[in-house]
Image (cartoon, rainbow over all chains, first blue to last red; front, side, top):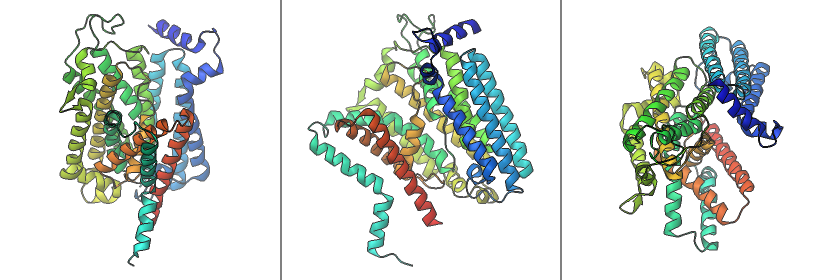
Length: 122
Length: 329
C-alpha cells in the first residue's frame, strides 16, 4: 500500500521531466509550506512580543501570567509549524505516515495547550 | 451626544463603503455590457452563489462566536469526494467502488453532512475544552481532513456521476434550480437557529463576551462544539452541491473557499470581532462578492488582476469592520 503511494507522489513530484523541480514541489506543497511560514512568523511574534491578545481574542479575562502564556503559546505554534513542514515532506514519501504525523502533532498540541491554559490562563 | 445628519451620512458611507462601490461597479458593468442584466446571467450568478451562501452561513456562525474556520475549504473537498465516490455510474470505467451500486442521493447528502459534522465536533472540542485558539485548531483540522481525503481517494479525480446527482444542479422546480432552493432552505433554517432558538442567542452572547456569558450560565463549551459541528455539516452539504454542479471533483475542490466566505461575511456585516451578524449579512456579502467577480470578468479584467481586486476588497472590508469595533469601544 505504502509503495503505491510512494510511487504516486514520486510521479507527481517528478513530473514529466523526471526531476523534482522547485516549481513542481511548490505546486504540490505550496500551501502546507505557506502554513508553515505563517506558524513560524506567528510563533516568533508571540515569543518576541509576549502579548497574548492575538491568540486569546477579546473579552477573555485577565491571565495569571501573560508573558509566560504568550511564550508557551508561541512555542506550541512553532511546534505545530514544524509538524506541518514534516507532514509536507512525508506526503512525498507515505501519505499514511503524513496523516498519522499531523494527527499526533495536533493531539500533542491540544493537550499541551490545555496545560498551558490551566497553568498561565485565566 | 446625538449625531448630526451629516455625521450619520458620513458613518453610513464609511460603514457601507464596500457595498456602495460594488453596487456602482455592477450598475456600470450592466450599462456597458449588453448581456449582463439578463435572466440567464442572473440565474448563473444565483447558481454560483448557492453553494457559497451555504459555506458563508456555516462560517458566519463561527465568526459570530468570535472564532473562524479555516478548515472549510478542505472539508468541502472531502464532502464532495465522499459524495462523488458513492454516486458514480455502474458503467463508468474509473468507478471508485466498482461493485457498489450508487446510493440514494438524499442519503448520500445526509452521510456527507454527518461525516463532516464529526470532524467539526472534533474541532469544536479542541477549541472549547482544550482552549486551542480557533485559528490554530481549524488550521490543524484543515490539514488532517486533506490528508484523510488523500488517503480515501488516492488523489484520484472523480467523475461519471449518476443522473440523479447531476440533476441536483441541473433540475428545476418552479423555474428555479434545485441548488438555489437548497441554499434558500439552508438560509431559512439558519435564520431560525440564529433568531428563534436558545442556541442562537447563546452564540451571540459567546461572541459578545464569552466570560460574561459563562458567568450568566450559558453552556459555552457545548454551544461552541455545536457551532463548529453545524458549520462542518454545511461545508459537507456545500461540497455535495459543488460536486453536483461541476460533475467531477478532486481533493483540491473547494480550496480557498473559506477565505472567500470569511470575506463575504465581513463585507455583509458579520463582525470578525464576534457578537454581531445576521443571515442577511452573509447573503449580502456573498452576493456582493459574486457580483464583483462576474463584473470584473465582464469588464475584461485580467484573471490575475481579479485576485488583486478581490484582495483589496477583503482588506478594506475588514479594516472598516475593525474601525467599527474601535469606534464602538
